[in-house]
Length: 123
Image (cartoon, rainbow, N blue to C red; front, top):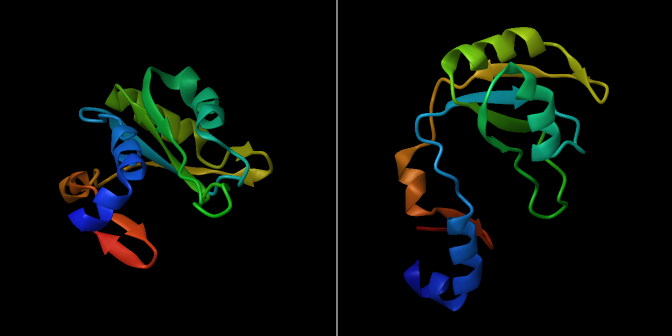
């Protein structure tokens, strides 16, 4: 609700400004990440395969521990596919990862800034 968002403008404007433009990038979802892995770590493991436009590892809001998956977004399709083949099953900090080229991109409706806060979805 706009009324609720108005009461916390810094929180919502900060959240909105952190969303990078990933249009045209090829997303690779990486599953089974060790919970200490961060975006910079993931980027280092995948950088050898080609130019990366963005890297994102979502963190649990309450614990600041990652959710066990992340996204590496490549500039070129070929680089993304090679990274998936080469990194499939590779152990990172004791866990075999499972990268795959994302089949579905970010939902355009998410750009309307949906948030879950205090049990309510704010649109």
